[in-house]
Length: 472
Length: 93
Image (cartoon, rainbow over all chains, first blue to last red; front, side, top):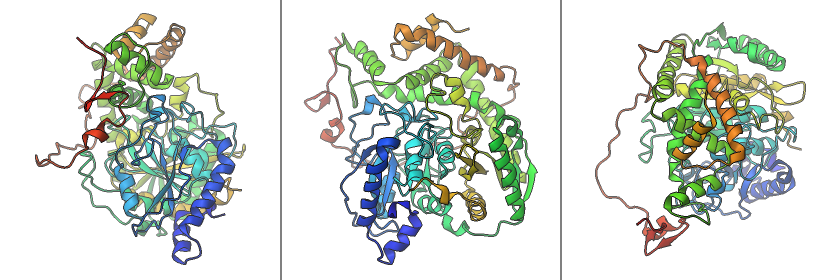
């Protein structure tokens, strides 16, 4: 039953010689065999335990990686046909850092193709199912990582978040997911989707595990010029602290767009924070309501540029029959990309095209500045801002698959933090009447993950659903 | 309003081919998405600077020194076709 445990508990058990890393690995492999036919959280599973001779905090405990980050010698598919046979030729910096702390890896998890989606339904390898209810989506795009952690198919995992891709699936699967400040974690070796937004972060069973992983993966990296030269704290020192007197802004305007379950869980959160001695006041972010429009101009624009590299020449799939070089490009890309990826590349091409650039792209960049200013102003007054992670519980598989706009709107509460480059966590916040988990989002100012950890850890001690996770 | 010809044009710019059956669906979906985005049309952003670099990061320089790099064989290892240490593409001229 080792697969049920948290990372910090397993570190303790390993140190006390009560279990060996191989025991943990075998327990996980059995769990994956038992569950993954139904859940489909993994794109690839490494059957063989390959011990790591580095002595670090991770003590050969297996970590799970979203399949858009490179582990040298293993496939990185991005859940796309175009990279179905791509083998990584170097380690992502986060992977290298985990290896240096003595980790091993057990597999790579499913995602929406190139991380473009909110449900993991756009994966070329089939949808991942929510372990709480197999008829529901697990969220996305890190749906495989979140479902694996929630179901005990992973001890903990890394995901990536561009507009909510860590926080939304964490919320819908009842686990913890942190998107760090933009620049906190190197993206070297993360396949690019929208470079001004992409961040890597942990998906874990509890807040302590998130802090442990953040301690390892954070920091300036010469290989990623956008990584920030900001000192990395020991985030575990912010766990289990007294948070009385902390100033919390409640972004309650959005509650009118939420299900009654989500509204009720937010009311309870406010009570819990009051009990912990925090000062709560309503906060307005007047321009955050435009975040979905803003994001679906900026992110596809960047994606259309980033995905130009898939041309059937340097790596990946190449179409079989073509007339000339241009025809080869077109056939390769048309056969290699799925519908949502094509839609976003085209949306990005459109908003960048001559005649539309000023109306869309330039305007969106200005609006992004305004949204950022809303947060800057709010953080003069507040230590953190809270809001629901999602407007509703997990929706049904297929329910929004043919309605891209409705799918995009499911990220309405996670996108503002992405655009503002601020850190935000989703922690479990109760269970809906349909027995599905809900998430509470805690946002802080840039590089103030300390406030997030203080707040999330104190809250989790008062209220959590770890005993309810579908681990049996 | 965006029409089917626009969708074909955008696809061509992006080096994509959209099946005839999907053109109508894409046109409708693009219409809905762009319609939703109209909410930002009336925002007064005239005094606002574009936030091209949200973290206000400046240029990051490094020393111009040669470092170890991928060897030729590794660099080509994922190529669909290669020849004599180079990527192979269809004849251009």
